Amino acid sequence: MSHSADRRDAAWWVDRAVQSLVFVGGISGILFIIGIFIFISKEGYGFIVSTLDFGEFFASPRWRPTSSHNPTYGALALIAGTASVTGLAMIVAVPFSLGAAIYIGEFATGKTREYLKVLVEMLAAIPSVVWGFIGLSIMNPLIIELFNVPVGLNVLNSGIILGLMAAPIMTTLAEDALKAVPDTYREAAEALGATRWQVIFRVVLPAAKNGLVAAILLGVGRGFGETMAVLMASGHSINLPTSPFDSVRALTATIAAELGETAAGSEHYQALFTLGIFLFIVTFVINLTADLVVRGVRKQRP
Amino acid sequence: MRKTLMLIALVAILPVACGRPADQGQAGDSSSRKVIQNKGSDTLVNVAQAWAEAYKEVNPEVAVAVSGGGSGTGISAMINGTVDLANASRKMKDKELEQARANGHDPLEHVVGFDALAVFVHPDNPMDAISLAQLAEIYGEGGTAAKWSDLGVQVPGCDSDEIVVVSRQNNSGTYVYFQEAVLGKQRDFRLGTRDMHGSKDVVDLVEHTPCAIGYSGLAYAGEHVKMPCISSPDGADCVAPSVATAVDGTYPIARPLFMYTSGEPQGIVKDYLDWVLSDVGQCIIVEKGYAPAKPVSCGGDAAAEAPAEDAEGEMTEGETTESSEADSADPQG
Image 1 (cartoon, rainbow over the protein chains, first blue to last red):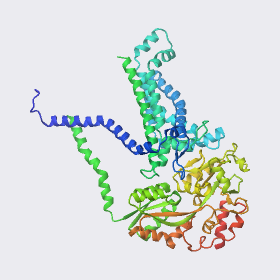
Image 2 (tube, rainbow over the protein chains, first blue to last red; image 1 turned 180 degrees about the vertical axis):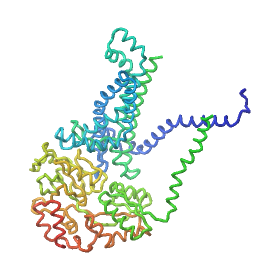
Image 3 (cartoon, each protein chain N blue to C red; image 1 turned 45 degrees about the vertical axis):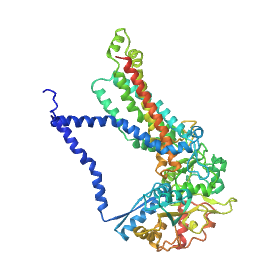
Image 4 (cartoon, helix red, strand yellow; image 1 turned 120 degrees about the vertical axis):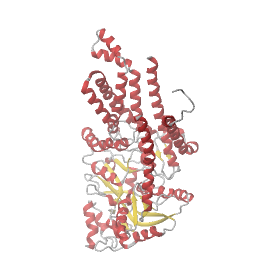
């Protein structure tokens, strides 16, 4: 069993092969993300350098890439659309997912807990086009009926849909964060005579704060990048929203609706890739922040 | 040991799994059927499908694969060289022709029919006639009509009085034509229009929204939307959208429908296009609610051949969809 050079039998080769396979798998994530960034940058680069006016891009709502006499590329309304829908989605999702996480993590026991966890995970697996369909065919007439507005495809509709879509993954992450709080904390608090609610509110939630913030941030990232449901439920209208009943258009929806119809390499095509670069950077920063926040947790506790 | 075996099995399966799509591709290529790729205009997609369907019986050897997506889709596919026939409800722009030539394609235009662009409102909307100037105020940037009362109309069921302006996504040929014909080349659409992704979506939304106004090809008109006639600025005469008024040129917003080929059509593409422009093909486009590229007579239903002479006068009152259809069919009946 000594470590000798002649040990190059089948097992050795298998070991080598598996090692390199696992290595490729391990670094593929990095390769893909770099590859994607290079690809979208390359497609949008010409436009960013030659035509793009940053002032117009971030300050003007005029997104008129196909205008025959004066094409304008203002993304403000699209950014506002995405931000308003995501913001409303978080207002919907945060209480739901925190409540669900606290119940599953702290109160529910035995079978109830197991069933709930499975159900929440199943909720996360519903395809986004199905959510979009719910927005279009159920929420739309409901909103028209309840609020007496002309069209039910708006910030409210897509915000609620997106909130429900983001809630399951946020619940799972938040529950993990609560579970990471050591039981000794709870026991110590209970020994001091704290009630169940005091234990959760004063001890467990503060201790799990970073993990909860990360869960919310990942939910925001999910909302920012969601396309299909938002395309179907938001009304697809270039607008700076002033109320939840305004129709808006999201960055992702704009890319989805227009990219298939542009000639590769045209200015419009490159402008859409510029939107893509912007989206990529925003979601990257959000995810990175979430990751750093979680890392903060790990450093605190040896 | 079991793990090792599983890994070996996995490694053995991988190439097989990866190889599969290629095998299928080869099987497709080796088949004897020839395929014409036909893509583009949403306005034309129904009739393009009907042509493809009927052509199966003319020449079973050739399959025509039709998909929609909008004129922009078809034209960009022509520029990128991925289609044989691009459908478009607008002309290719000079810039697009340049791009195509730069890629080694020389798009050639063929008019295959005409389409009247209808304006839709909710059936409860009392408005019977609308002028191009009014449309421009509703749709154009800086337009003065944001509420129905601005047009002197009160719409039952539309409490907010807001005009819900329904338009198309900005690469649609219908969108581009509407801009040119109604707003003029120098004026843009206002911001805040609901940009639908297909003609059918426009009709659906208008059907369910009392406050809405929209536009699309006449062929997409349903029974549950109302089509006001288009009046001249002084309101003297008003022309209802119909195949007949599109053919005789009295309807102000009718446009040619195109198919583009890369260079002179050859082989199966030429045969197909010739058939589309033949009497049989042209009768199919008439059947689908469009006007033909040239006068044809299609047994009994020759709406296109002899446009109803009395159509103009009678339409002034603003008729519903059903009665205007009846009018154009009657004279031949």
